[in-house]
Image (cartoon, rainbow, N blue to C red; front, top):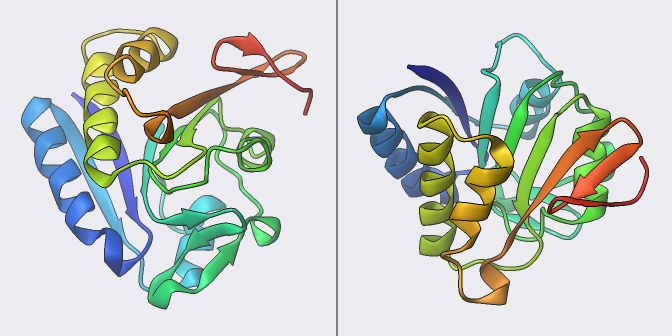
Length: 181
């Protein structure tokens, strides 16, 4: 059994969160769901606030170039987030959250692996990608091979999720050396 934290960032991601929780429980995960009711709650969770999160965190969210959509579709700007999630692995399902600025913010905050889409994946594709990735990890695959297997099913370029990993010299992107942090 593996613990996993799912953060439902806004009310428009609730159905996705329920689907994730149900399937993850079925395949052997022990999910804890954090239903966010305010921007303050969301930012508190990302800075190791009052609630301890699992090593694997799924952000069930909607996003834009500037940040995440919080409660009431208020944009939580990336520039205003101070992330402190040491040794965590984060999967963001929010559109546009797979860019280099997002990755740098999460990796600087201690995250080992940050996986997110840089475009606008279709909702079903994002859910299936997440479930396949997490299933492969549960089955013992390392993050890179699980990401490759889950990515192989996505035919549309907009559905693509990027894998950012912390390295000694900065970060790698999709298994290739990227820019330094």
